[in-house]
Amino acid sequence: MFYLWRRSQVPVKQPIKISRIDNLIIFLLCILISIISSYKLLLITPLKIAEILSWFLTFIEILISCGVLILVSKKENPTISSRQIFLIITLLLTVQVTKLALASTISPLFMIIPPALIISQGMGSITALAWVSIASLIWPNPDIVINNNLFFILLVCASIVSLLGGRIRSRAQLLQLSIFVPIGSFLSQWILIYKDKISLNRQDFVLSNGDIFSDSFLLAIGMLFTILFIPIFESIFGLLTKARLLELADKEKPLIRRLSLEAPGTFEHTLLICGLAEEATRMIGGDIDLIKTGALYHDVGKLHAPNWFIENQDGSKNPHDELDDPIKSAEVLQAHVDEGLKFARKNRLPRLIANFIPEHQGTLKMGYFFQKAKEKNLDINEYYFRYKGPIPQSKETAILMLADGCEAALRAMNINASDKEALETISNIIYSRKKDGQLDDSNLSKGEIFLIKRAFLNVWKRIRHRRIQYPTSKNNTFS
Ligand SMILES: [Fe+2]
Ligand SMILES: [Fe+2]
View: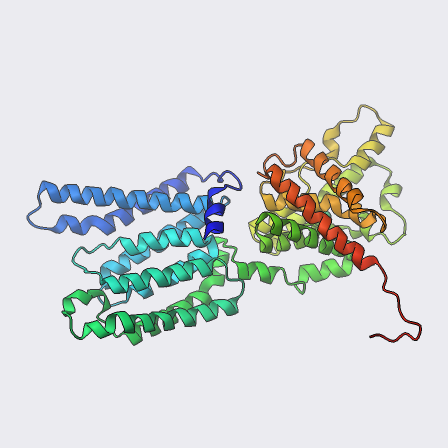
């Protein structure tokens, strides 16, 4: 909980701007929710000033709640799109309409828990918890009496789904959740409500007058259907669930298979970067699944011309030497970003993953070709030898940029180099990126940069250990 709270408090990046029309539509939807949730207060006869005032306060309270929900979702997901906010608000609207029409026939567990699962999977636990608290507190029909025990069970089950839903990493675990939560709700309803129900007035159970077994069964069906439809929500609303990230990180994906076959050097470089970036992200408490997948796709653009990149040249001729034009060579290097973005579009990679492609290069200078051009013409403009950017906009893309810079240096380092020498090399590379302004938008703190250096050093120690050959015994037997 503390980790989740801390993550929600520290913005990774300023929230992205949402267009005026989208803002207006979202605002109108919030007004609609407030009207649906409060208009019944105006139907009381005779209508007095006190009732109108009470309606107005309820209306404003619901409107503010919607605003807070949107703010929380933006804070937890700084790159949230308007489509995703529509999803959160529309789900709230649907629940309010369902409550109005079917509150006395459908269990509130069924109305609130499945949407909470979608939100926690797509937008994170904090947003889901905020959504759950609003959806369970606002009941449009004032005649409905909520049974305290049922309300308690609803809050506990919905909170469990929200907390676990944001962390679950596979569809199998989601299936387990959709079986255990309904079983848990059935048992708790049976213990807390069913026994009392026999002796108490039926009026107290307007919301639980159904059979608790069929209610729990309905909840299980609802959750299973939600899991079935989550991939559709992912593509319509651009959601990036943990399960989707892990699917994309599968090395059998056609694009990654192509990379390993057509650009084996780049593939090896990618795997080493994954190791470096993963370790550093773990150290600073970032999103490991996101960076692992992002790292895997960051250089797919090199597939457009694999042999123009040094890691894929197996001692054969370097085409850049034959070209002998530094500006053209710089264009080939920039093309690995542009082509990478095209590959991302073609393969429908989520935006958060595609962001790694331009941001890992930022606006870095192609030093080697710039020097070569300077040898020919001293007045040459540096502009032609810088990547087009943007510079890293999140901690994860910044870590990938640093890992990308350190990888080649660490790979080339002497096996007998000391830890101090390795740390010095890493520090120099990171310092040069920082001085160049590449980390300005990433929000990495000094402490985090220190941790990243330590993480890279740990990975270097692992690489060195792997490179030391084990002595084999004379008769070549293994023990
Ligand atoms: Fe690159
Ligand atoms: Fe790279």
